[in-house]
Length: 393
Length: 216
Image (cartoon, rainbow over all chains, first blue to last red; front, side, top):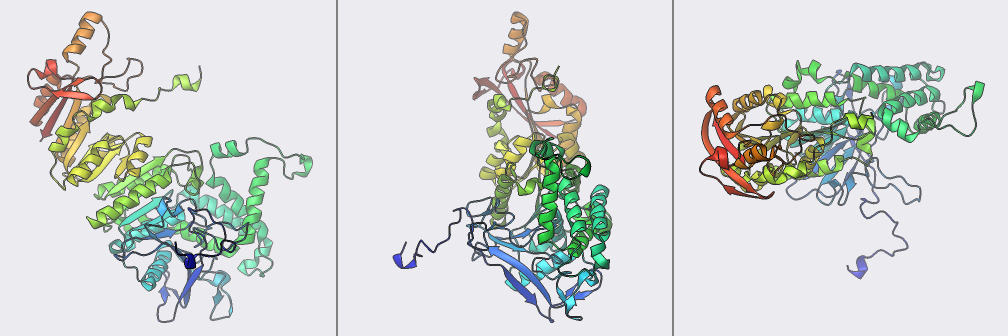
């Protein structure tokens, strides 16, 4: 290493060597000349999309991977935004970084915040240019397909014609599936993880309870809540319900069992068990980082995703796909049970597509794709290498 | 009685590694570069990986053991976790140049249906199996009065995953009855766990493993 290139060590913040390190949040605004036409017919313009990139686009431009986040995620998938000691890494730091499963020394990774989210991309918390006030529940209804459309516009702006892969878990997996269907010529590999081609009745049911909790909170005020006075109780309840569905019975038993908190609640019906404490903490944390109206819109977008309704059958849905698929489910996932992934695999098989599928053994429930302790990383890494080799042969 | 005692013991597939690879050279020689090959019961994908490297095939494997599936995908192979019979059931006919059923017949509830399915989705089907009429097995049974535990059938009666036994004569007869055309046969006799020598005469007596290539 040249001496002159070296940063004084005292100024260089410490990051783990397998982290992409300090990353800058980026955003891009598509002007009036590039409006986003939604499935509902509504037109959004201008539209801002928040994103991050890790690694380098190679000369052949064939190493780009799009990461799609889940319900409450953001574009911040890897690395650190600051140098503080308590700075948290991106939500998929486990997978993305130099030498990791999604190896940033080989792949150019793009992670964008999807349409309608509250982490920098245009959504219900953005200012409606017509009124100068936040959209709130006047924001148009949008779908998974609209999210993909915005991601496509972003890739156009970045000059990326074809993706090596689109990877997403849960609601991100729905986007990955939609990518393979909407833009078959632009994606070589589709990797839907812990997801479904349509939300199950049980999934819709849980989402509906979450929405009712928010809407039933008097502070929701028909969606017009004041900035410093959100329907915190309702949103926190929604998150608590969500968290139960993200875990599994085994995982909850392993983490909490019947352990009690030091102080008994007795007839005051306060906190008594550790699992209660955990859920409340999750709810409280969520209220500080998420927006209630956004939660309503996003769960609605998730619920309305239905490839069978859109195409007549799953097999029809994939008829025009040309991508290779890696489908992954987790045995203990009861929110997106393996049988839903198996239906995708079966439809892909029937229409003669290139597909790999694993149903991973672990007790972590739906959240498994975000956690260490299962083989998802090995699968991603093997499949990405295969995709790249096939693209070049 | 606890649950563990009631559940079947996990099968130690390492024991059959030598047997399962003994006919790989023969199978590889059946494949032309760039062909589409489906391996039903592919395990960790050893054969598929070799075919990919040596013949540049478009590979697909089906395997019911989840750990083996994860291992195969991690090695960069398109393998699907599933039941072999179900998988070929509703697949488009003629999807593959070759379908491989390597040492899986003894595990199948309905081997005839699986072979029929394989013949429907593949142009050719390579079927290999341990020959229960091998002279050593005959001796073990006739003189020792014991069931065979050898490199071809390395399990005790109480922990074997095999639910069926077959001999070369029986398999040939089944092919005749079903009208499957046998276009090629190869036989080997195992010498210990990892070595095998070709057998050219009296296979039903001298071969411990057999391979048949079937066409409709």
